[in-house]
Length: 591
Image (tube, rainbow, N blue to C red; front, side, top):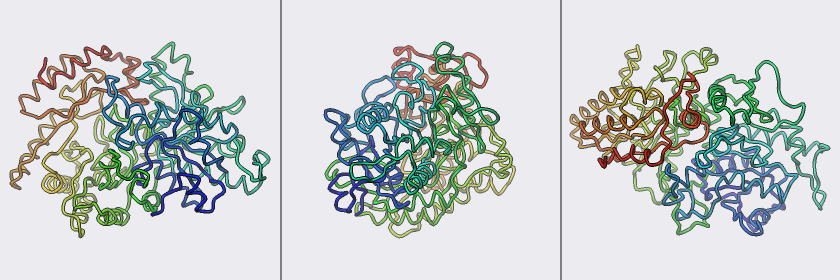
């Protein structure tokens, strides 16, 4: 099988004297479309580039892992991991997790905290004039000033702390592809900013990048004197130092960041010298198909033979249908990273991947997911795109479902039926979260209501493996309002539908709700009320998490400032570790 090279020997076997792009990853190398490093590597390979990957380099000692492949012709890319490094390592109580899900055998010692910062600083020490471009969720969520829960302070953009030349935020295929095209053109034209190695071979420098790439959409850069954009289409955020002195200003900034992350036609954001270029338009079906149809092996690199990579075990027999989520949940990072507009794959692309899964030697007939950030948003979006272009709402379904939203579940139900009928597929469960508020909504169109009922019945009777997990998150309406979640009364309605469908089909299945404790706006009395209500319903409440403030979410901004960015009203937030522990203990009947 054809993995991207990870060693000098593998490069030599391909006849390469140097790579065009070298990617450094905080994750183990799994050549699968659910792992961002593999996606970017395959996208660049498809552009005709020589791409190498250094997974989980040793950042101690003599930095030999950072030297072994030499200098790339275009740039170094940093992919810190599919999950934020600090969330991956620590619980909400700031305790070490039992394992690192993206490392072989779950080892904790194979990545540093904040790999974007650590890897970039090492590379800039070794190769100071070579561009370093940071991507992935860690850099994406830290592209402007942000609250860091583990440092317990508002931090500047990770561009400032790392020394990288740029960030590609969100889904990085388009921005990265455009950068390599511009840098390749500069090499071919022998631009005066190029550098030359001892053999006379040209390579791009940080100055080459600045000259050619500062206006690439969906990137972030540090402006020099005279480079800061001004005028119409530019939003100037409160400076970082002012946010430190007056947290209210940090809250005011957040609203701009969230809204511009979810606009079709966004403004440039400027904070001090940090410039955030607007995102690309949502990917078309053809574009997202092209990304998923690349020649992934879908397997961990052979160097991990005999070792377990927990995250890969979870997704090895699952298939992603779309990107993006228009739920806009206050505590979720998807709004800032993937945005609210849905990019859906074609049926043909999905079915090709499912067939590939069925041919895997260890596949026994059970697909573990056909989903995405939310299970039931496939091929959904605005009916009138002109209205969407003017819209600044971060959520299409809160505080109410937008009348412009096309909520047709028929394509998804039809896809479930087609996949289930494929040779080799015995069972297909849906592991992604289901938005039951969309299933219960009155769409003012009987066909859409009928299709929502058909999807619901199909989901419950064919795609649940004993337990269906849903996420009401809380029972108290004032907390749910801050979370941007629907009233708990909808859970009662969905539970009734679930039990009715199970009875008709003769199935004994359970509905398992997820809840969050210590979310902004939640006091101990609210957890007491939640505990009493769920016990009265005889619900299993073992799916529990304490609120973890992650960078660049609405909930985190409220937690660190005490203000709601959209109303500027004060919101109660529990910061005391013992009181947070007490809130969570209501789930277990220990209070």
